[in-house]
Image 1 (cartoon, helix red, strand yellow):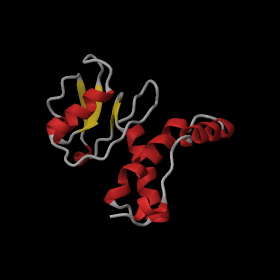
Image 2: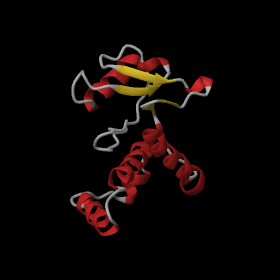
Image 3: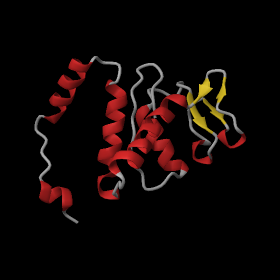
Length: 137
């Protein structure tokens, strides 16, 4: 999910994309029921409590005035390209880490390089992933 005002991305690996799970995720990341949500036309988005507009990718519709999903699609395309070109295999165990990395990249992309580096280093404080934890079943 990408906020069009702040340009911040929120992303989470989910076990299912049923309407209840999708509505909970949207509710956690949308500030108020009067905020319009823009999505593609897939069924899990139906019935959201927010004003809701869609584009139907299934019929070749990708933009309808202000209605589009281009911002969040950009984030996912970067993750998909990394999967094919750099990571090769994304295990379920570490999938949220990969998703966090690419959401984080989107969230700092408008900073200059020095500010990006400062931000990334600040996020590392107090975090440590030992190899044995990385590879444990």
